[in-house]
Amino acid sequence: MLHHSDREFIANNMKIIVSSIESKLNEKFFIKYRSQAIDAISKYISAIIEFEQSGVKRDLCSDNEAEIFINSHYCDLVESIEDNEVKQVFDALRYSFACYAYNGLHQLYTRQENESWHPKIILTEILYPNDIDSLNEILTLYRGCDISELDNKDFGQAWTTSLSIAEAFAYTHYSGQEWFDTEKRVVLKTTYSKDHVLFSEQSVEYEVAIDTNKLGHVQRYK
Image 1 (cartoon, rainbow, N blue to C red):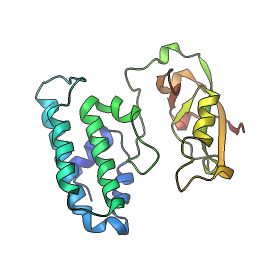
Image 2: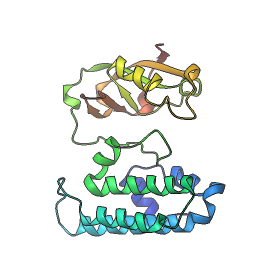
Image 3: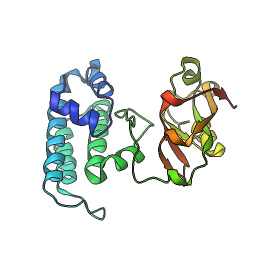
């Protein structure tokens, strides 16, 4: 559905699972806007590539040309759209590409949204900068999530070294969402080797991003 070159950029540069975008664009409520979304994505990627090839360094104190274009294009695009669900999809796309335009994959990954639909990001290599060197060789990690992750052995990539943070993600952060079901929320626990950590930021959420293929035994902590 997406153009081949756009799929390559999204998958290789942005580490986004392309099917997470395409499946959303194919949903019944969005079909009539699909071509507009595909066109917008192509334009966002072109703006990012043009900026990156210009040689101008990113200034994190101000918006760059690619960000300005992406945000402006989005505003023009949704001006005549009344369906809020459709607007949310376009806004999620805008947010993801604007984040990448601002400060590359680091910004996109660390500022990704999870309360509503957004393109799914999975790291496949170490993300810099990070503080992996500060970690112990063997880590005890926790994750607050839906019980289905444990039942299906289909675990998310973002874990934490903080039990209290995991509890907040399990029982507090998403409690206002329609899909939230307290009875199905759990905290998982595992041990994991520092050698396979892809990203760490031991402040605020004390996040550790892992390669889920390297996970060993995972248990329900509470």
